[in-house]
Image (cartoon, rainbow, N blue to C red; front, top):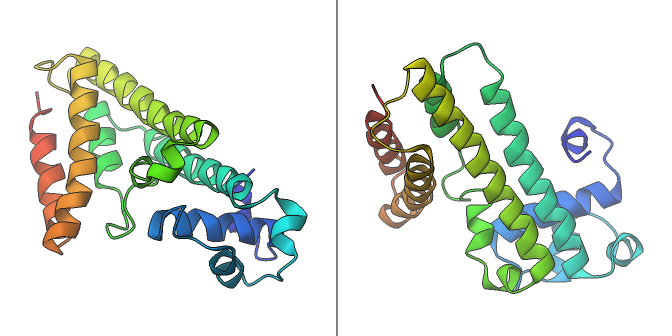
Amino acid sequence: MYLMMKMNNKRSSKEKLIEAMADLLLEKGLASTSPRDILTRAEVGQGSLYHYFNGKEDLSLHAIKYNVEQLISCNTSVLNTDKNAYSKLSDLLLKYRNINRGCLVGQLARDRSIMENKELAAEVTRGFESMKQTLENLIKIGIAEGSISNVLAPLEAVTLIISTLQGAYISAKGLQDDSYFHLTINTLLKIFIP
């Protein structure tokens, strides 16, 4: 559902609000985003927000779902290739990323206002669970086919990948150099070469 929004040039006000909030949550966080910020970014009228949503938290839930679906869709497109598991893992970890924005779910998990709201936090957790399951399945397939080293158990590998990926964003931001993100991920991938 949410993926169709980007493809449709004539987006509705509701879609514009969801996309605007999805970006603002990553850029500013929930607490720092005002209704005015949302309306300005979405380029919609003042009444639109409360016409479609029961306030900022309701819109935030839709925006977080949108970000999670973007993550799942992107991962699925990388995985639906005829490559071996190691190549898919490499493609998944080295796909284009906006380093300054951060991970679609990792950035949200660092937002205290989001994680203190059970409904919003559950959606962020769904994103992480999807990422965990995708990686764990990929590691198991790779070990079975011999394209990924079995030096780590699948859950150990997944924990290392997710932690390294999130840390790579922070390091690249802190050092103000995207090349550190790529260096970190390329170093991580060496662990999985059989």
